[in-house]
Image (cartoon, rainbow, N blue to C red; front, side):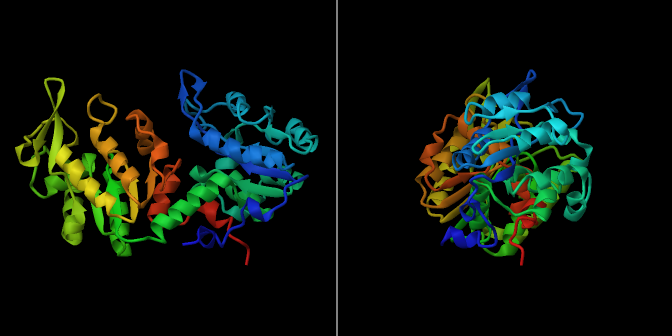
Amino acid sequence: MNLRDVLADFLTLDDFDVAGKTVLFRADLNSVVIDGKVQMKERIVENGETIRELAENGAKVVILAHQGRAGGKEFLTLEQHAHLLNEIVNLKYVDDIIGPAARRAIRELENGEVLLLDNVRLLAEETLDKTPAEHAQSIFVQRLAPLADLYINDAFSVAHRAHASVVGFPTLMEACLGRLMESELSALERAVNHIERPSVYVLGGVKPEEVFDIIEFALDSGKVDYILTTGGIGNLFMVANGMIPMKVDKNLLESVTRAKEIQERAGRKIKYPWDLAIEQNGKREEIPVDQVRSNMPIYDIGHETMEKYAEIIKNARTVVMKGPAGYYEKEGFGEGTRAIFEAIADSPAFTLLGGGHTSAAISEVGFDRSRMKHAHVSLAGGAFLRYLLGKPLPGIEVLRKKK
């Protein structure tokens, strides 16, 4: 399959000569903040590489980005981000967005120079519930759009947000995908809409509603062959099948009932663990599923399950993974998650991994990401989930070629 065909509806950086052009570049610099200190994240590194490419090709790059949500603990200016990004590409920073200082700094840019404006969410207009056409008429967009020649979105993680910096500018200007956006979109299209069979979903985590939605969408597509459940999701399916006991409150009962309905529909496509890892006297102990008792602390899948899941993954052509296999942060209970990563590395299947915990788990269990030769690790959360569910993303739709 030619991945250029997958992106045939979009323009990319390859379609433009950016030399001497002023580019509005929507980046994703949003990062974890610990004790008031912004942490360097892969998103910053990946966006930094695209920005450096633009600068080296003679563009005047103006970066639009956000940090946190208004009123939240992680809602900060982008001064720290400027220092982090400066490790990758030389830039200027101005603590302004649409005022005289920002506009003057944009006009004074020379070819190859980069300017980071302040947190776009400092503007109330950014997050208002409006259509792309309405956002295009906002003061934010009307002030900056006339100063630029091209809009580039490289922030897939906010593509599900109909915010002014995401949908307003491309409504008025020529626009295209950035390199990270191009990579994310290619991988998602390949895993969701251009599937090679057998197709396997590996689903865990602690948000059953999200996972149930993914399973039902995958079943509706008729293109999924196996669904391997782990973590809390696997436990729900085992409870639904009467395999393990669990105290079920009202909220949990709804999840168990839904798991049972899905299982009846999917039949043998859905797999759940044969054995589990529990904590006994502070240590990992593995037991068969039929030996699990109520209130036992289940933290991981067991080795028999790892081996059987690995065999299915190694024979697959497409794998989608969301959520770790267990409580990988707890010492001794990252084995299941690591075993699945090992199987993915050994499989010829194209693999899409997504969800914040999945990405974090790769580093946490000490796995070398470079071993996953055929895998793409998505850096998005909500946008990744919406795409898996076949829902349109405003920030993607507005970038499609005008017909």
